[in-house]
Image (tube, rainbow, N blue to C red; front, side, top):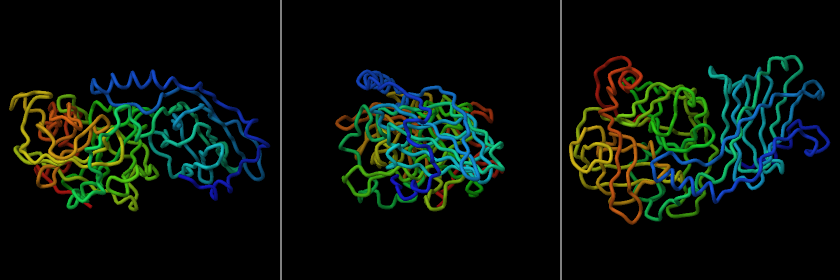
Length: 416
């Protein structure tokens, strides 16, 4: 996000950036990292976009006018992006945290007391720069109330649209005419970052009370755990503006932080509650779902292939029930199998994305498979029906949360 006019108002008053305390990282061996990523992605692991580095930096205050400021520089030559994890974050009213490129061409919105949360952590979205200034300002009356520690820097080696395995040409942008009629469901899907290093896809999910509780689902193998949930960053509306047009998606609509609720490896799902509801201007919807176990329906996937801009895929034939990667039905009945896509595909980075039946209800989230442009291999989705009761405990099931009033309903529609 370019915002030179806003940057001109920042309180930085040091004589030159060169005098600022700096954390420096050597340039990465990108070729070696990409080789590792290629092998990991083929094994079904969530892809990475950054290498995380542990650090420990706390404010060293300098006086300025009626308040105080602290500045810290982070430099990583040739990094595609940088992102920051504050393992301790609490700002009083009147204080703010700004993060911007040293050339003042890139800027993340100011973080303030409004970003305080019960985890007392803050994880930022990426900033597309390899040389970044972190600046905190606070009025004198509240400076002692600032609690802040930078504990991680993510050194980016590719952008969300520069995966090792590029998204294939058979993918269908959601800006294309084929997506008509699926607009509500499209707006429930976001691309996610976890731990400042891994990315996947996920989606807002409705509940039987239709009360907009910010429940969010993804795949268990995306590693959103009780420990990493505070680091979850969701980017909404990352999509191309024109069908088969320039890759011009924006990562400016984001939110940070979640509370882990439930996970089950059996159907590869994770459910979290976002720390805040999406802003109304993001126009996010809450996907409907079907936990009845009904099978044999055409299906639609909405996802971020290789975490490129949002895409839509169609299976016109009937889905089947199977084991994960199984070739026969019903197998252990934990997964929905898309035998082969008729239009579009999925790719690494699509993991955790929803599969909708003909009634526009989620019946599973992507676990894995071999589908790609140019082949007829299958994809496998952790079955919503299986996830509904999980392993019989609240920590492994969807029902205690998505039907927390115990209505007995087994399906709901998309809420917008």
